[in-house]
Length: 451
Image 1 (cartoon, rainbow, N blue to C red):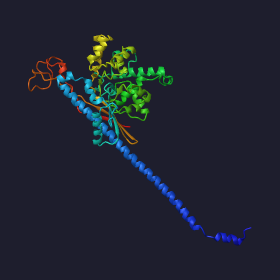
Image 2: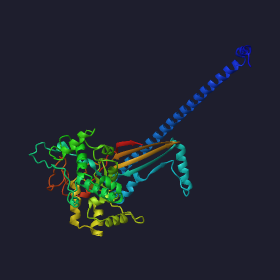
Image 3: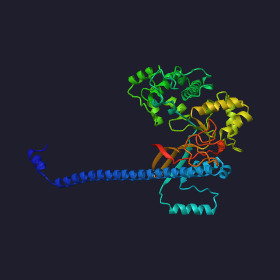
Image 4: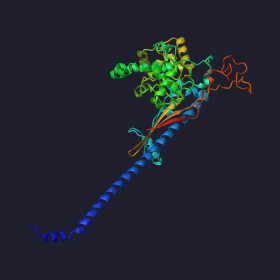
């Protein structure tokens, strides 16, 4: 048994206290040091990641600038060819398009079979270049899509007096028959035709999709879209606008009353969702282009152009056009007509011309000189990636006619002496259509997305 005296002795013994204090202090210092070291490593990693991300961003921006330079070169080459009749006959459109359509990768990849001279040139370029990292740039032609902003009603073109016929449609109601597209090529009727076609096709393959969209109200969807982008008060005479206005009052979204500036705006419009927008995203856009390029046209857009084509006819067209051994380039409406009318006899000459005229009256043009592009520039540095997606338009000026020797000096705009009735201003009877020159203006970026 421990006595009281022994307990006092044990409690009064202070030997080893200093050692315990030192060990405790060391443990605390080690914990602080570990925390400081960990925070330092994290800060260093953050700084490294920020630097890598900044470098990747600069690389992506460099790729974008390179793409814009290539489009400027294309613009200069196109304008030069247009101004030189001899060059116009010798330089095919597809050769000009190679100025922008070939993807670019840096560092430049060198194949195993490349000759020594090419390898030496690439190595010298890499050594003299100030770029550090990698980037990939691609340019895609988007001049094959219908512009949804054509749905928009401009208040400046609408007379507020209901008694005055201003040539504008008073109603936005759709013709829901399958044959309506044969006579009505308006953007709203074309949108309905294509959307219904794609929805019906997917409903046949997807039972759950069929359950969700078996009672889809196309009229309501298109009216909501049209009301969202049209000028305020421009649809006062449209009986369907009241329902659209009531719809927007029920949702936390005010109509823009202006043109769509980005395709992402579609996701906020009542009745439109991800699944439906994905169905049409490759056929329509919101960017300023009304040209249809037959070399880039999709099967769905081809069906809109000529609804009488069967699925087999459309398949045969793409087999003929995209033959890997003998690809065909359709550089004009006349080339397309040769295939449809003369070669395959899918339409007669009169019907074809009338059909194309309907689209031209709506403002559409046909050609192979693109004016709307999508640039994707991806920069990579170490583990960081930065992607820029830019939409670029190459504006076209009004075609100008070649100067005719019979033009009087100092003549003002308007019909010139001797011009036939109905001739475009600035032309004379001696001016042939092929003498009219289309000139491209400087490319400009209309939207940039960061991924």
